[in-house]
Image (cartoon, rainbow, N blue to C red; front, side):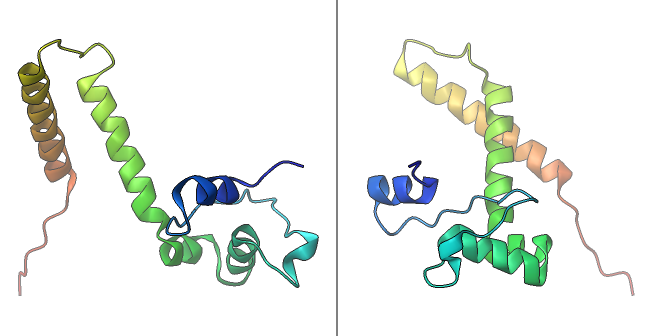
Length: 116
């Protein structure tokens, strides 16, 4: 029997890890969901009752998505070819990458001003 990802992660990192894996649109609750619902079953039930967007907000999935996007940006800026041999050069390169990403994030963030 195939093990669920949340069981594998809980085994490796302990019970403090909250697994947020969005179920596919065609997901169906397991037969045991009535008696012993898994995390996945609870997610499916919440999506069915409140909708996917409400589930994302309540589960904190939006934060995860933003973090994944930022890591993708980091990889695009720093790239796979950046592996200096000297540790001080690595630190400098990382600082430059962080500044670039922070600047990119700042440029894309809306600024609100009161006009009335």
